[in-house]
Length: 152
Image (cartoon, rainbow, N blue to C red; front, side, top):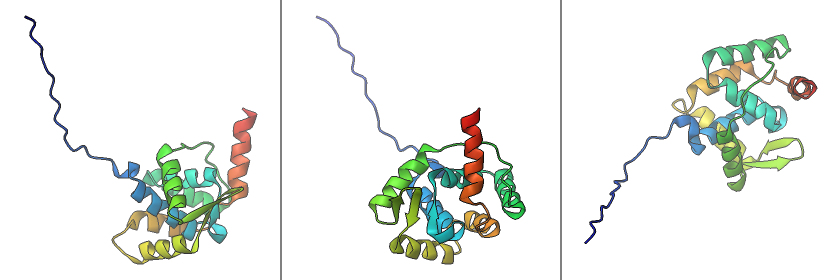
C-alpha cells in the first residue's frame, strides 16, 4: 500500500505596499489632475512622470525645479503598471474619463479631489509637492522629452 503525503497551505494575510494599492493611486491621480494639470486634463506620459516623481523626495525636487525653470531636464522616467490599473478603476467609477490625449477629471472626480485636498491627513506629501510644482510641467515639455525617446 502506498502512502500519500498531503501538503497543507495556510492562507496568511500579506501586506500590500501602499504604492500598489489602487485607492492610494487613485487619490494621487485625482490630486495630480486637480492641482497640477491645466483644465483637469493630462496625458498618460505626464501622469506617469508625476507618479514617478512622487515616489522619491529627490525626484519631487527635480520636478519642482523643472516647473520653476519651465524646462524639463528629466530625460526618462518609469512607467508604473499600478497607475494604469488605478486609471482603469477611476474611469470605471466615473472619476476620470478618457479623451484622445489622455485623461480628464470628471465633476465627481473633482469633488473627490477637493475632499482629499481639504482633509489634512490624506496624502499630505503629495498635496505639498503638487501645490509647489503647480501647473508648470506642460504637455509640450513632456512631449519634447518623449520625442527624444523615439530618436534613440
